[in-house]
Amino acid sequence: MATATIISLEPIRQGPVGRPTPVQQRWLERGLDQPGGKLPLFDEWGQRIDERTVRHCIERGWAAPWFSNPLKPEWLVCKLTDSGRTLLGAR
Image 1 (cartoon, rainbow, N blue to C red):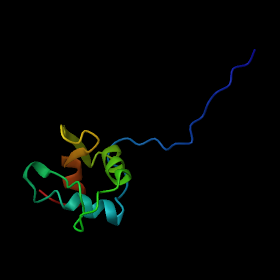
Image 2 (cartoon, helix red, strand yellow; image 1 turned 180 degrees about the vertical axis):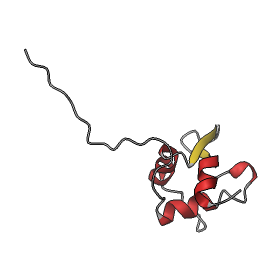
Image 3 (cartoon, rainbow, N blue to C red; image 1 turned 180 degrees about the horizontal axis):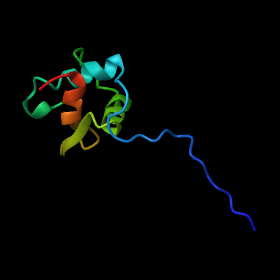
Image 4 (cartoon, rainbow, N blue to C red; image 1 turned 60 degrees about the vertical axis):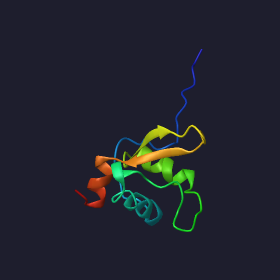
């Protein structure tokens, strides 16, 4: 009896690869001047940052989850990583 092999068409993401989109880069840049590199939950117009932006940056190693918000546990509070700083050319 033959067994089927399942092949995933999802790209394998390991560490900081590629370049961020302009939206991702603007979000990451906002962490440069914040204590601990805290990344904002909302954009400059008060709109929540798209979760896809956040998740992609985490997958690439540019951002990392920081802590859980006890009042809003569904919100992912993140900080800029060293890889993110390097990507942006910051020290």
